[in-house]
Amino acid sequence: MSHKPEAIVFFDLDGTLFNSQIDVLSSSLNAIKKLKHNNIIPVIATGRTPCEVADLMQKTQIDSIIGMNGQVVLYKGEKVFTNNIDKDVIMRIHQYSKQKTNIPLSFYNDEMMCISEYSQPAEKFYHYLKQPVPPVDDQVYLKLPIQMLLLLCESGEDLYRDVFPELTFIRNTPYCVDVFNHGGSKGYGITQLLKNKGFTDVSTYAFGDGMNDFEMFLTVDHPIAMGNAVDELKAKAEFVTDTNNNDGIAKALQKFGLI
Image (cartoon, rainbow, N blue to C red):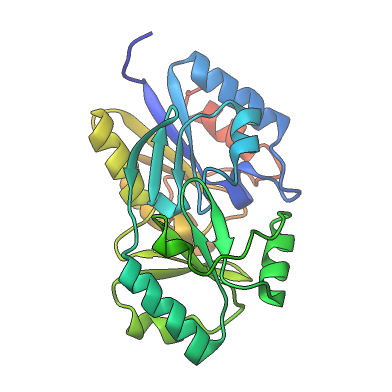
């Protein structure tokens, strides 16, 4: 088996590799095994952090991830890229949230997560993810690098866009908005991975369903939308497969001759 993979396949999680029950179909697990056998590298590409999906990575035997919408890149366990948010910018957005909007924050890096305060929005969001509420530490950004923030809110993020032009705000669920350095995206993380590992000539494929997959679709050679994807993403896809509940991943990998 050569050092360089035959291809790389990037998988979004929610609505894509995960079915509606936040689980991975057996057809997808079998397909991932076949990819690896064929010297094709599966990579998770998600808004979540590596520590959030450690159990999933163990279950699927996927050891590479574009995490936090491209703000951290791990390839076979090796950290190849991080995109840290400036501490002064975090301090400003923290103060703005406390004084102007009363929207609580989450602070994320590739190894941990904290929240600015215990609140109903935090309870609602982490219950939605079926995760425990992280510990409270509103000073964590002074001690550790932070690659992504979350605004824990169901609305109100538009107020931030003009005030913080150095940041990107993407609503990722009904209960949170992902915040990271402007220009950061899953696509940017993929570009950093290919460049850092010398894989710019390797064929790339990506599966996704939502608008935080848009830049990823513009970056890879073969963008594949799930049947349950939003229409704007389907319009950018080379192929629209079946849904995340109906073996969409395995069917598309077979169609493209990857398994």
